[in-house]
Length: 584
Image 1 (cartoon, helix red, strand yellow):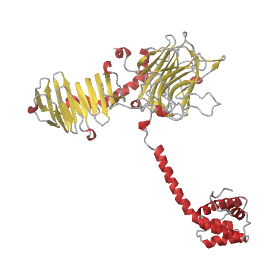
Image 2 (spheres, rainbow, N blue to C red; image 1 turned 45 degrees about the vertical axis):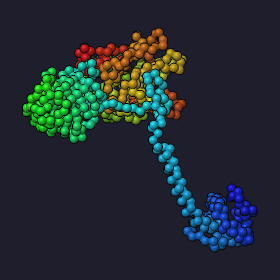
Image 3 (cartoon, rainbow, N blue to C red; image 1 turned 135 degrees about the vertical axis):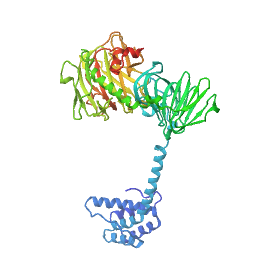
Image 4 (tube, helix red, strand yellow; image 1 turned 180 degrees about the horizontal axis):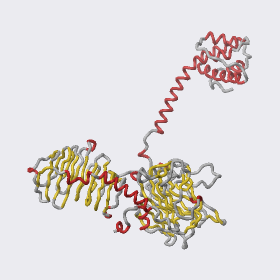
């Protein structure tokens, strides 16, 4: 029995014990009652002991008691007398005490819940973002054990390339493609049409040859060429600057043409404001309205005339031309998708072209040898739209999704190519391709794993000839959040002859080949059982496995048992443009 109180009256333990054991006399009952009236704390403690006693009686088969709502000193006194006379007054006393203490218990419970809620909000919902340590990762840094140690991802993108038709870029300013997010930079278009949609809703269509500098989400500079600008009310105030003037949108659609002779602006709809014109300000109004145009020469001479929409007709036909170019890409790809299939060292090619919703395997399209064992077994995965609307792809979203196949050959060199669309990089390692670890002849032969790290770097892992070690080859961080949701071509080349590992993104080598082989002779890479989009479960003794599955879509997959050249990598990426033209 629990002690009632350190300062309890003398003899109270005996009275309680005799009361519990049904041996209390009438005089002792009166004494206990007097003590209860003078000590609320003693009443609460006695209530707990009576409750425990009743619970024990119920456990051995006594009738469950119901509690009355009223309480008085007379009922307590009569209850004690009933106990003395042999009645079951413990249950009666419990019911009476319960009516007193129940409101107290309810109030205490509410107060306790409020205190717990306050502590929870203080410790778990408070914003400690300023106090979280930030670790800047490089390609040589180890992956932190805790997610909180990763730096917060940031983006500097201000627009997205929403349309493209026959675009040929000047390589000095970089290569751009449809769906790509762009930051502040110079864009030099040799020919073709490109549409930029800014994050504020403004759209700029440039016609090559043209040079355009993206200054901010609300400002571009046109140094040469024709551009067509459409500004919705949500982006009002958009600026276009040229060597001769600055055009401020007032809720309009307008066009600007910059030549070596000067700048002309045509208002297609709405109104614009002209700023920073060095000469001739008095010869024309500060604002131009719909149907009006202005030409300012490099010498400051100006000419005011009627707008001519036909001059900028090509930029307004971009949507139709974009669809035509996309259809041409798909047609070219279909006619050239089998161009490597006579290569004896291309072991696998999954194009997912004829995949249906209910299919459980994807066919390997190589011409020889025809073997069901070389097809890919689809586990989970869903059918999705590919790079073109008429093409198929597979989507990896669940931790169980994967494509499993077997590579019987051993390779001294390997090239893996994949068209992917990333949905997220919320895992430490997001696997594109991985093999199992196999023990052959008492020795662990090299296994291979290719993945994208949470930092955006590409990583290739090979099992080392040194037991229980792996070789890791990482690129600099490449993928950013603005790359999510757009199709990207990736390739990795492991060249056993030169002992290098090279990464390609959209047909172009990123960084320099990594030369870090710790041995002089190349080792055969025995692939064996492998998976696309996940890590094979190789240790059945473990109850759990690390989650490293890829989250996104796969459109096409190649596996070669040789090192492809840069020209061949480009050919896998772009079925339309020739490598020789691009390399110039």
